[in-house]
Image 1 (cartoon, one colour):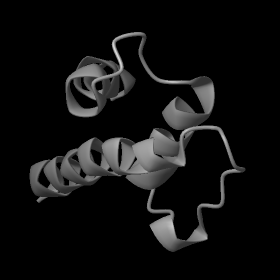
Image 2 (cartoon, helix red, strand yellow; image 1 turned 180 degrees about the horizontal axis):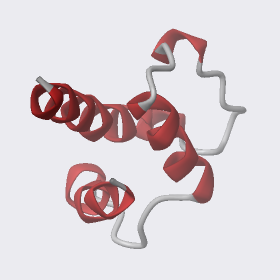
Image 3 (cartoon, rainbow, N blue to C red; image 1 turned 180 degrees about the vertical axis):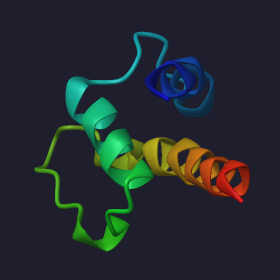
Length: 69
């Protein structure tokens, strides 16, 4: 699942250098069902990119659910 995130993050965010470690960890938490309202990253670490983390995680979680049924 992380390879999926790695391939999508740069095109979605426009950040060619890739995701920070905290963004990769957050992706895993989103896939596992953490509520995005509970995310509170500190100032200056790229909070705007949370949407670029949440979107592929949401799609990935939906695909996982569909495959399980």
